[in-house]
Image 1 (spheres, rainbow, N blue to C red):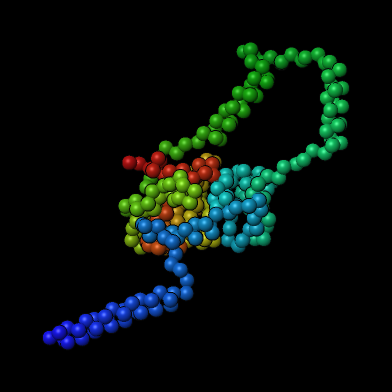
Image 2 (image 1 turned 90 degrees about the vertical axis):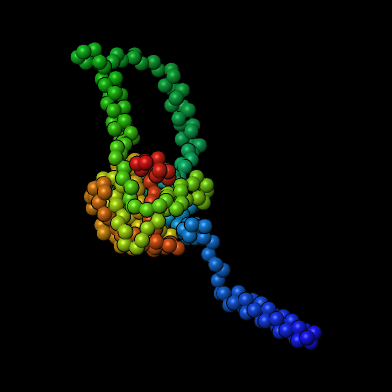
Length: 282
């Protein structure tokens, strides 16, 4: 009996050793390390890092638009256009060099001296102060111009969207985060082929797969302040420059550049990521 138990114990040990060797061999055959993925199975960290644009210059790639580059660089489209002196509708071309940061101009010593001499001369010469030209009802031209400018700025920079709609039906599996490498939007779970809808009226300013980490992506411009994005789509149903209405189906949900079928949804306010949950209906 003792001999049988000893033999049985040896046999068990052999099996354990064999299983250990198989496990070690399995680990050694992996040529690449497993990607770092969120617990919700979202986008690998390596892909999120590759997607961002940093530095002072950028070379345009095929399929990109100024909106998609501004999106990756986390800057307002108007700022990027102004730095590169690009007028609306912001047409760019492959291999074009774009500045991401405005270059500071250094004044020369001669210009500084000439400015100081000019300013000293201006101090000596005194000019009579011209009175403001009065308009009817007592308002001056200067006051009226200031008033008009204030109204224009209010119209341009205070645009609001009254009715936001959910872009898809499903459970929110990952929330917005303000962390440096955190989620810049929300992730909504679903099934392949589920409808993806525009969150508000707007125009499609990007539709394609050139932004690594977003898969098949749509970016919609709602006004001068707000943009929204819909990532990882299986199929895109709209084209660039197409006008869309709130609630219109613009894509079908998928898992392009993602670990699972879902919609990654973002909202940008003047180029910066904001929490979509603050806008979507409860």
